[in-house]
Image 1 (tube, rainbow, N blue to C red):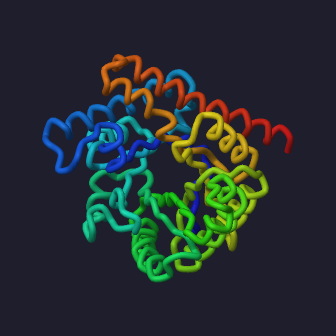
Image 2 (spheres, rainbow, N blue to C red):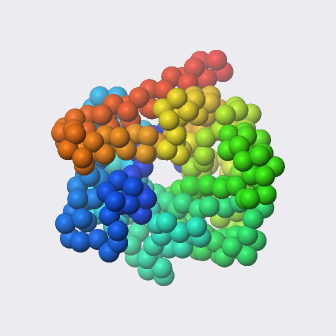
Amino acid sequence: MSPGYNRPLYLLPFDHRQSYVTGMFDFKPPLTAGQLAAVADSKQVIYEGFRQALGTGVPAPCAALLVDEQFGTGILRDARSNGYVTALATEKSGSDEFEFEYGPAFAEHIEAFAPTFAKVLVRFNPEDGTALNRRQTVRLKQLSDYCRAAGPLFMFELLVPATKGQMERVRADKDAYDLRIRPALMLQAIHSLQDAGVEPDVWKVEGLDRREDCERIVEIARRDGRRKVGCIVLGRGADEKKVARWLTTAASVQGFIGFAVGRTTFWDAVADYVAKKATRKDAEFRIAQRYSEWAAIFERARLSRASAA
């Protein structure tokens, strides 16, 4: 069966762990029982914002959430019981090299929650770390093969961090790297991983400023009979204007089926809740509003594309 998922997918990701615990709470591991409960409670706030948005602005069939097992066990179980599309993080948080969060037992942990998607985040620059990329690819094929055989769909979050040499080529200008160098590296990475037998149903990719780059990503993701594979654009913690631009550009291209915007959706609201500057209800409302805003932006651009076709 060829890979693929081509229905609209408006994903709220809040599977952040190490960066979330340290950045939001300033906690240092190992966490106490009280600290673990505080982190889990804050993720419940995000989940309630997600649920609220389903009634106010996000079409329920398009809505999806991504959370981790460590702090989101109850959320994953409740979401499944309500029939929501779910994605479960499988990678070890905070590691530059992809490793399974639960090592050889990764399959058991996926099966315990039966998510719609098993999701992996990988930093993969095709011009850097040949041995590193080979090691990662072996594990990624293991996960890909498992998903093909066992049933959960496979979501691949591809990050392409710049090498020192690449940054020197653009004089340390991150925006120039994103515009002039990263798109071609993304294409190389996807092609290389596919050739190695890594077959995601959905590619979750960093935002692109040019429509033609989005078109090339879809073309490579769907090459050689992979006609149903979908692409979604992630927010990368960028400011609201940049996220809106990335969503609008991606939605104008057939094959980009949605988005995954996390920190720009929930961070400020949760930070105010944690600092007791906002009530729980206010934080949930703000998250719902922001999530709905992304859905509206993507829907407008998608419908505009469809009407122009």
